Length: 75
Image (cartoon, rainbow, N blue to C red; front, side, top):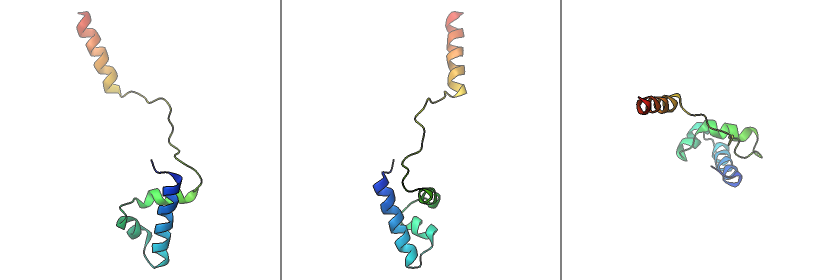
């Protein structure tokens, strides 16, 4: 996860490069960064990580494996 301070620094670097004539995608490539991520960050720079930390759903395959194990043990 990238802190707000780090996000601000990356945005500043790319903006400086663009002021000197670089294209945004090329500036991002130079620092090994995804241009789409930069665009999302620029929409609202004051927001931090927006990923939810809620309940993660199990994959269907893991549920099926548990059911199969139950049936093998009960036979």
